[in-house]
Amino acid sequence: MLDFKVVSAIFRKDMRVYLGNPTGYVFITLFIVVAQAVLILREEFFARGLADLATLNEWMSVILMIFVPALTMNAWADERRSGTDELLLTLPVRDGEVVLGKYLGILGMLTLSLLLTTIGQLSVLSVLGDPDKGLMFSTIAGYWLVGALFAAIGLMASMLTSNTTVAFILGVVGCLMLVLAGTLPWASGLVGVVLCTLVVMLVWYAARGTADWMGLVAAGSAALLGLLWLSRGIAMVTEQGEEAAAPSADGAVESSIGDRFSELFGSLSVTEHFTSFGEGVIRMGDVLYFAGGTALLLYLCAFLLGRRSW
Amino acid sequence: MGSEEDKTRPITIEAKELSKRYGNFAALTKVSFEVRMGTVAAFLGPNGAGKSTTMRILTGFLSPTSGKAKVLGLDPTHAEQRRELACKLGYLPESGPLYREMTPFESLGFFADVRAVPKPLEAIERVVERCSIGEVLHKPIYKLSKGFRQRVGMAQALLHDPDVLILDEPTSGLDPLQIRDVRGLIRELGKDKTILLSTHILQEVDAIADEVIMVSEGRVVFTGTVAGLRGDSTLEKRFYALAEAAKELGEAKKKADEKKEVA
Image 1 (cartoon, rainbow over the protein chains, first blue to last red):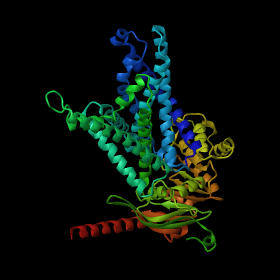
Image 2: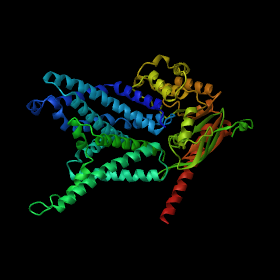
Image 3: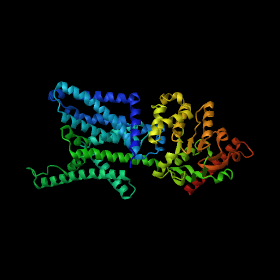
Image 4: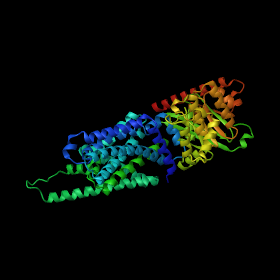
């Protein structure tokens, strides 16, 4: 089991490092300014005449896709570059405690940034109208979950290299794949292939009997994501069967198998799973998608950290 | 190694045929040695000899490609044993890496938290006094001189009062006065702890070590006392002779391997 005193010590150390130099404050300020600007400096915001975050929703994944890797790029790459990884990993700590502590540090900064942004947005929206508190809550919860997933991608990117620029680019590309999955077939396919590989790898790892309880949680998360995805796939195939049985007026099947597959892989898209949050609905399937994806990626981070000894 | 009386003391650090390869490059080749309890052992060798790699294996940061290591009877490659060992081991990595944005006080507080040191403030006070870092305790580490940073590194290694200390070039980059202080501290600590320190400075070996393990080209070329290493020559001459011999042996082996590959 993890020792949460160790996790807490690493979390507090990282928060101190983030807030102990100007970079942390620059990050928070820029995040607030950009999020605020995207919300209110657009014509649609005033044209719609509604005090909500709808104009920000379509852009928030893109904002987080750039800001979160900027926050995570130093998380492990910097430890490795400065040699403090050697110090940290020769303390009485487990790899999982290090990963979780560092992840919570990133999440702490992200939560602080989102909290301050929300205060600003709520103030503006309250002046302009009467914002729906429930809708605001679900939307912010959606932003937080997207950010949490991106933070896990960014942390993993940071563990792959000691170069912070490369870590940033890898993080952005990783997040971009999940954003594009719903729109571009090749991105959807790539994300699907990566997920399938991870599931196979974790199942193989668990089957060898070498997985610890964290490995089992990760394998469970991967399997859960796989099941969610599969259930959607079965629904699509059934739907396609019905469509094939009842062709349209000109006798052609409405969509090809290729399109269906693209749609199936597209169901891994962050944007698709965020949509309901932006409409004020918190669906269990969406929460599981974000939580499962994050747990899976954090396990892979611990797995990568363990590889230093191989 | 050492006198008859020394041989009755239990073995604290043990390396058995440790090898470490990075692709085709052999960083260590069958390195074997023992360090007994209460000994200050110098791990001597030229730069790139494999000293840091060995120390990283002994602390569990790296795993050997083959061979076994044991410190206090615990296997550093085994996850749970490594954690148990880390509680009893103080380690100063090469060039004393530290969290630059933190102050020494914050940094020591963090290490005390992770190590679950009982009465952390008292422990910090003790190491601050022992390593003479009181005057810089609340200054950010990036503003400290190399000497003070090295002392903060020593303080974190001593914080939990470990039984064994592994110090990777503890006097590297220090001025003569600082070197004298650190050597004095190591001598004092050596009275009740087992210490393995790596160095390429011969005066250091002469000044503080009870025993010497000399490595060159990833191989152990000498184990014994300082007097044994010196023989009827000087430490310097013996060091060069052993290092040269190891280099020639390494080159001959490399050529033989190349010939084998061609054949």
